Length: 85
Image (cartoon, rainbow, N blue to C red; front, top):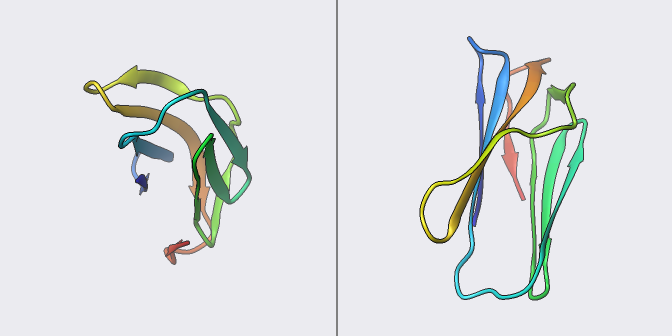
């Protein structure tokens, strides 16, 4: 499961990814308006319409628990519309 939340006050985008019974390497791809995570078994993608991710480097990457990764990106809004794919 991939979850992305834009935080308007901080001009940032928080991304959490929960790996459920997946093995092998995991690759994070960042685009100006989308985040994609690819593993051996699946591709998870979230597109955030109206969002502009200005920093392609993840800040504060951390392992929340045994299966959830979390990180933050610099981002700004064009509008408040979000669409999950």
